[in-house]
Length: 95
Image (cartoon, rainbow, N blue to C red; front, side, top):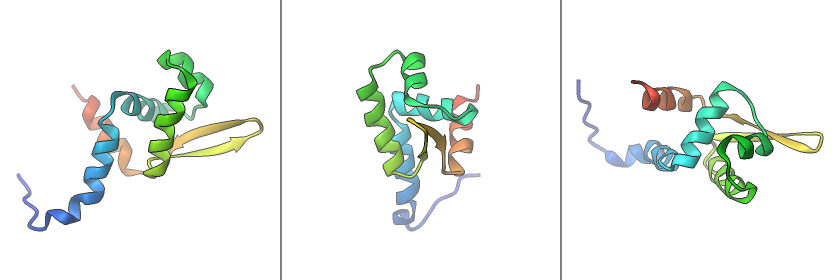
């Protein structure tokens, strides 16, 4: 069933989430965080990217409320904070 929304302005938040997840690095970060919490060093090793690039993408995800970071001692541990994200990302990775 196709759902047509008369007032497309109500979809702004949903479109913003899709826009943020539309970058492959951010999508990869979020998909990884669905499985477990993680710090920047581990992400850097998994993605084989420099820390500043990962930090830039984390900042975008945090600003949009998709993830959150919690300081534990000297490191920040990231988790997905928006409950809607799990379903979206799982659908993207469905085969």
